[in-house]
Length: 238
Image (cartoon, rainbow, N blue to C red; front, side, top):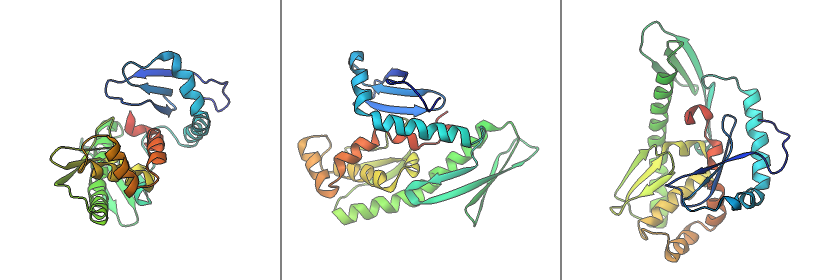
């Protein structure tokens, strides 16, 4: 990916059966992607790019900077913006097939594994991220629920590829563990969005009116959330 690019930049148009709105994604491996719902008119793609020109240019430079400054291979640290923590990762070779993760007091993770155990490495780090999500996101959700007088029946941590959160008719809320990588304002938007679904299980004007009351900046945050995949580390997306 090159930081100096002609406008409009090269892009891939990807149709998604689950997408309800248009969203943009940028990564060093896949470049710029426009993810669109069924029925989208491809002739409108350049209009989408123009509306988000500033975001595209900014994130193109950001992704390129990360790609050139961070070595390929396993991550050296995990920056969890949601809880304002950064964990360093140290790797140690181990002769057997087991991959072990040890947690140190100084926000350091030590991973023992074979040099070729990339898949197992991703599994143990993802498991640890799920634990962090349960530890930090559940109390956060509970506090917001109490603050705004919502009631939900159950909360769980999920790993859906296209959703940050969901709420069922039985008021069961699921939160994606990848929320840990997002800024706190976006995480809180997702939580309040799902809590509002405990009252209105739809996206009617009543739902948006309620969300506006508990989160006055919701419409701006909703736009920002469409591009939040840029916060997710690439090794986790592969």
